[in-house]
Length: 219
Length: 374
Image 1 (cartoon, rainbow over the protein chains, first blue to last red):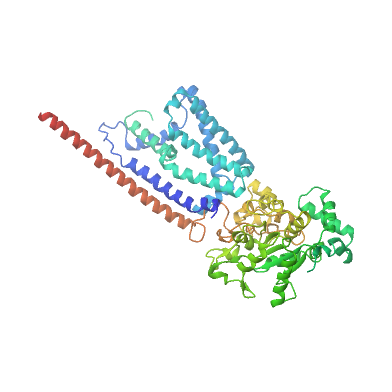
Image 2 (cartoon, helix red, strand yellow; image 1 turned 120 degrees about the vertical axis):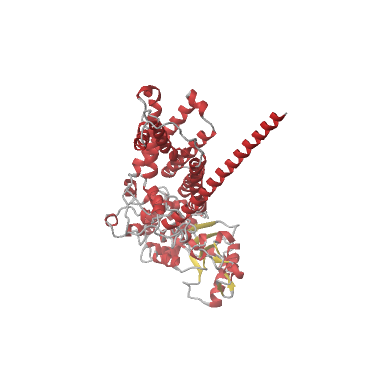
């Protein structure tokens, strides 16, 4: 069994199992946390609070006007980076084939040349994001191994993907095998690091918004 | 004992058979071009070949379907590739030679003796090794035995076809005969793998010709294949590549994409991971190649191509299902199992955490009670 078959065979299978089991493990842990009962008299009804929760998912995803001067650059970087990741993960034809083999559905792809340009831009943004983390005094102090390793794992997938596309670093099947192996690594690391934010970010914002609205505060 | 050096040179033989000098130079120029040699190399090749003596070639056929030999012979007639019969001295080939039985075996022994250290062994087919190699025998001798003997005093071995190069179809899971590649058995001779199922005729003849002209094995890739023919993937040189780049794919064999000649990636084309010259040299005298005829590349020039799932599943699909590739149902089953395990682990870890927390609280309360009683 060569590298590519190993990567998309047993290693991928193990990675998928670890990914699903790990994600559910993390979510169950949070759902079963013992919350203190809110004994305050609700200022708003359940319906309004739920609406507040929904609103928070949107409003918290947009920079607050008061702080836009300080957070704007980070927001732009973050959004561009995530949009780039979205395009290259979900709109590249081979990736669609890959996900299609799991889910049985396929969707239209972007031209490969466009995805290549997006990949290069996303890689550049990844470097910019890292630079910001390393140079921002507060962010640097808040960062730990998890932040850097999560960055490394995601960037490794982008870099090996670009290498496979550009045919550098060795024979194409080997580099493609490395690309899939790096994706396997991402799946394995995903539930145990900050990459889990993809699952947490909107539910936590919704819960915050719900609780704030219930207390009568703007969400 | 006949001395091959006293035999007529290739040039003399060509003159006798009425091949014009111009025709021969054209042939050599085409071959030099095929081998990506400099423009003047064709002339040098012609001069070298004309002065050279025909090398003895022993063609051994083991576990094979004769498709490779079929491919090779189809290249000879009526084109100038037929020169190859004049360029080499095919001293043993149990399919093509007139002799049979002991006479055939004697021809091989004689060729080996007379051309000690100079002859070329061409191998077609994999070599079975299970049960003493009984699955491929000729003249009461196993393939392993014949190969080992023939390889001992050979100048080089050229493996024609994926079976001799990598084990091929006989080597496919579960490989009941223990089929192996020649390079698994012979380790002390230069081996050139001309893979493909079958290989392109011009690639076989080009490799032979290069060896005859230079006396050296060509530059080889990691799989022992001549880089001049196996240096690029089919995908890199495919005329449908622009459609891949534009994201235009045929989804079925009779949809609009297929009719428009769009990329066959989603129909399972293995072109991106297959190194061969199909897209450039092509088949049947340069008429076309499988992709041009509307069928995805099977990846037949690569090791274990038969064991890599369906020919029609995309290269990017996962490969761990019951049928070689994962089906959505299997993926859902595995995901459901993983979710159940994750949920159980989650509940278990929460309960354990609560138990520890309770024990810690009780412990600290007891300690406080103990402190209070003093």
